Image (cartoon, rainbow, N blue to C red; front, side, top):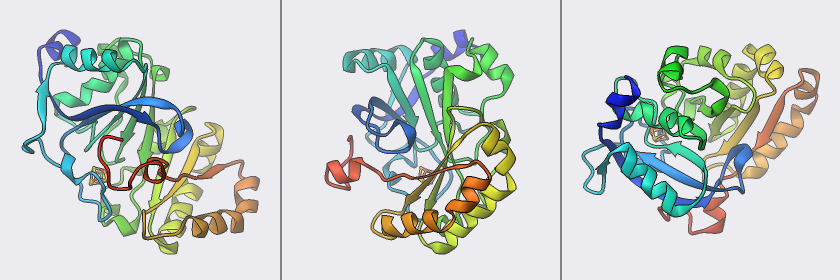
Amino acid sequence: MKIQEFEDQRIPLVELFQSISGEGISAGNVVTFIRVAGCDLRCSWCDTKYAFSEEESDVQMLTPDEIMDRIEELGSTELICTGGEPLEAGKVKRYLPAYLAGKGYTVHIETSGACPLYTPQELKDFRVDRDDLSYCMDVKCPGSGMQDRNRLDSILELCADDELKFVVRDRHDMEYALQVIHRYRDHLSEEDLALNFSPVFESLKPVEIAEFLKEHAAYFEENDLWPRLSLQLHKYIWPPHMRGV
Ligand code: SF4
């Protein structure tokens, strides 16, 4: 899709709000979240089920300009494009993050890892360089029930400033994460990618991840890898099930 065509389209927006980035290396920054509707995965622990479908009653269909007006009202230039799934192939919403990056915003994309990342041609069509945006890509662990949807080789397309996220609900998930890390360790190390281990809220205690990372500290050190415990800060700042924060 070309920019001119995209500008006339409407995008299913669930919510757009300013908050504190809760996860990953941007945690603690004041950012604007843009949550689009639609995701065809069904992670067992998903905490944004209200964004599964464009048919939900509170979804608004907005043009890119209308979305930018809302961003401007809030004032932050650092954006987190999330969902649902922002990069679903064949959907207009896929191009919103690239469009916003082309407008000069700092854009982080949270993606399930089940959809293709932008191709060089897509970036070119939106006049965006690869380093104008960053990805936080999930690797779905067995506890999500969505492990077979991983496109693991997308890891090889990640580069500096991108991140991987493993949402883990038990030790089995952490061991799976370690297997994936081991398989891609050369690339993860070369690009110095953050490897976020995030506990399923109220299922796995953060201390269990902390102990696991300590237990494997020598392995991470030897392979020049950057594992991190990543907590969902917003669930500690505000009531854990509150929306729009
Ligand atoms: S990919 Fe994200 S939005 Fe989709 S079901 Fe999983 S957690 Fe929910």
